[in-house]
Structures are given as C-alpha cells and as structure tokens.
Image (cartoon, rainbow, N blue to C red):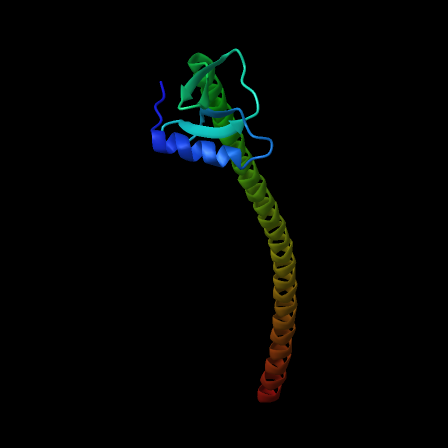
Length: 156
C-alpha cells in the first residue's frame, strides 16, 4: 500500500503540469539494488496498464505495479546484478592469473638465461683451471731443469 500527503500530492501535480505532454500518472515501483536488495523508483507515466494498481490522491493518479510482479522483477534484477558482479570477479581473477603467468614466463626466461650464463662461466673456469695446471706443470719442469743444472754444477 502507498500513502501520499496532500502537500506531496499537490507538489507532484504541479511538477507533472510542467511536463509536455502532461503525464497521466506517477509510477512507483520496487526494483533490485540498494542495501536491502531493493530500491524504490518513481517516474512519470503517459499511460497505465491493466496490471497496475492505480490509487487516486486528490486527483493525482499513482500507479503501482502489481506487487508480485514488482518483487519478482526486483528479485530478477538482484540476481542479474549478482551474476554480473560474479562475472566481473571471475574476470578479475582470470586477469590476475594471466598477469602471474606472464610474470612466471618472464622469470623462467631469466632463469634460463642465468643457467646459460652459469654453464658458460663454468666452462671458462674449467679452461682457466686447465691453463693454470698446464702453466704449473711447465713451471715445475723449468724448476726441475734449473735444479738439475745446479746439482750438476755442484757435483762437477
């Protein structure tokens, strides 16, 4: 049920008379949304339907959609809003997963490059160790030759 004070009725009629064309009724409806899941909607109408409950307040017609239809429409709107919200959440999660997958791919590329660099560094170390071993062996031979010269000179 709906109630309207005479002052409110007069003010609404005044506003309606400023419209072109002049509306025949003020429609009041319950729609989905808001904190409790419902919002109240008001609009000027140029016609009413047989499904409307029409109330008269001092010559102002107020059309109220059939209550069952109104709440069904509100529930449908709430359901649609919830579906949209969940679809948006799924999209956000999907986008976040895609971003993390891209980040993982980049990290894998960096790891691969680091592995390649490590293998190259190990090769360089092995070549340096080999060159050091060869140089140390040559120096040992040179020291042995020098030692042999001194031994020969001391014996001779």
